[in-house]
Length: 425
Image 1: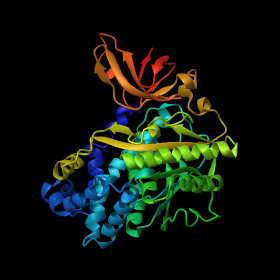
Image 2: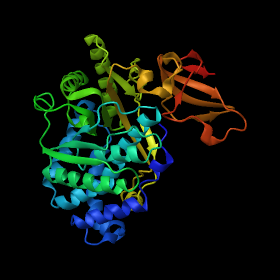
Image 3: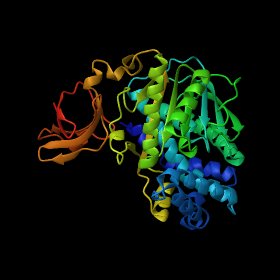
Image 4: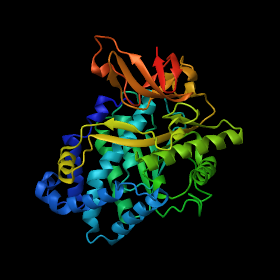
């Protein structure tokens, strides 16, 4: 995944100042400088971050089948029983919202880089499930505004935000409206509105949306599916049933999930289950676009200890760098797993023109960083044959920045050898 420099640089001092202004107006902080004050962050934000970090990043227990449910249960209990819910929401908004915003922005930017262009109507009808502070809706705006290859979203439209915590939903609505205006100074202002819906999603027990709900041409969730506790088959059935009714033709669905092995493998299992159901229906109106560039078997699932994720790097807001220092984490690089599904009968090359001229059997994506081995570069590839350990000759005068890296795509690549040791020519 190639994140454009303008997007990577879009969250510096100006973004921090906007966060401080918004937080002051909402009464989260008393004065603008609190957002970068070590004393305030240590006393009012750090205790919540340490607890949330422990919940989100807990080492996987031996009982892996219940680990995710236990983790989410801890989070819900802590969210509901916090002695200072305002500071808890402030901590989550300050630390996790910008990171999730950038993850979604990177996915949207990648779609644009590969040539995807909006073809789903003159008005945006978007929905975000588990919206929280509207990280996803703001991420789409950022990806559209700060990328040289714009997808071309309509200037008019609306976002439906679905969230179970009322106060967080109110925060998300206010922040989205504020952030869109902030980004409007960088690009053509978009007349987007927000419709908040306070409800708990019980996937598998009741429909995601009322039968009379409209169709949407952009369907988004980030760090949401891992909270539901459904197996891949049940999740795939539910999503397809809802997409058939509520995802418009030429619309896209974006699912962003954690990069931890357990959660990432669940998303890969979901991809496998979706492909099986797409093929069983014998209809070609759904296809998975990213990151796999096709419906080939997943190489990572072949090894029970393997998984697949993306990583993106950005310039953190200055206050977030300080929070990293205080909490003992490092958010310079953000890992995540994701899927992009299109509802369209157009071919892969029509949807992603970047891939034109490169047959599927000669198109590969790197699923690891490159490392130097003598005069070669070694990395893992994923393509029609699954996952391959491969090497490629590096020219003597090549600089480090020219080396392929995780998420990059190789076109018209001639690969020979076997999965344990292949060579790219």
